[in-house]
Image (cartoon, rainbow, N blue to C red):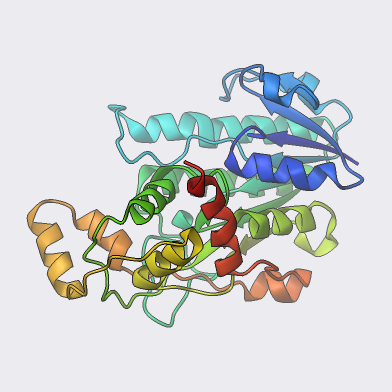
Length: 315
């Protein structure tokens, strides 16, 4: 089976490449720029991903497309019109790929979306489910939702199967952005006022995410379905920092500052969104993937964090 992977040089893409290397799938990478590190793989340079991208060479003889490439959530947004930028890549680019894939005879397209399609926060004890009404709160989440809707329509019109996966925050060796910053702070022993946070948040180790992606390559019940994914064990922010410290082999320096005080101070200095990420609940229910696909996460949060920590232990 020939599998085309977009975004194969990224964080999730690297883990997916390693997984597919040991399988009976023939893999091709679609890259925006030539990448010498990917030289051992069949690769096609497609350039910028948008409505005008020509995918013909990349899609030749391909059975399944795994679409990871995206304009990701940006913490320090510089664009004057972020939504247009997200739509250009995440919506127009994805639907252009899907249309060309269907015309090329691709049987299935797996799309890596985001839990942000569901929303930003959950009520305690009421995790997000695939059947919930979408409630994206920012430009990134909205672009992912619009892409999902367009892909499902293409599936309906063409017969090409589409699978949508919505992960929460992904961790693993090579992770960047906020999770990497957190690991560095823990490693350096930076004291933090996060010792009394009693929220619940879902995470997913990159190996567990890749496991679900590869299951969806061939599982017949995955066709035209949406799946949430996680490690199956939710943590509070306090527990997450403590687990990271354990994985790094250092002491955690967390002050037990009341959660309400943190939220109040954050609001005063215009950082309410930061407090929301630290103190709010965001849980997902993975019952559908378990029951419909027979899939389950095989790597625990603790073991995943140990793998994540290895890269930081040598810096």
